[in-house]
View 1: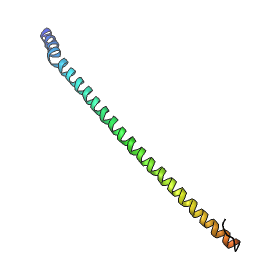
View 2 (view 1 turned 135 degrees about the vertical axis):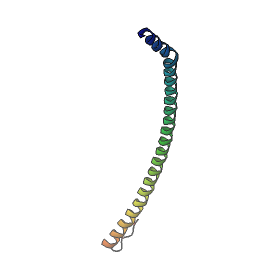
View 3 (view 1 turned 135 degrees about the horizontal axis):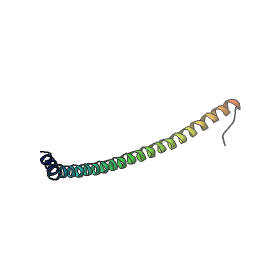
View 4 (view 1 turned 180 degrees about the vertical axis):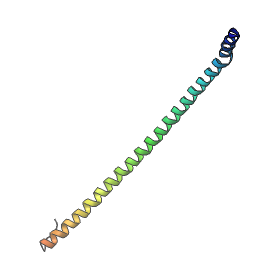
Length: 90
């Protein structure tokens, strides 16, 4: 009885469990590869969006600095005109 059970175990292992395990391992490897590829694509997309957003922010920063410089110049002239009447900017 014990020998028959052991024979059954060995037979099931060779015929059923080993091929099934191999199939599952291959499927897991394929799934892992697909997920890694999608992750790479997602990262590239996000990096592109981040670069675009950084470029927009840099442009806004430059525009803001130019605008503020103009405002500071105008306010400085107003202050000087109030402090020194008759001052003309050269």
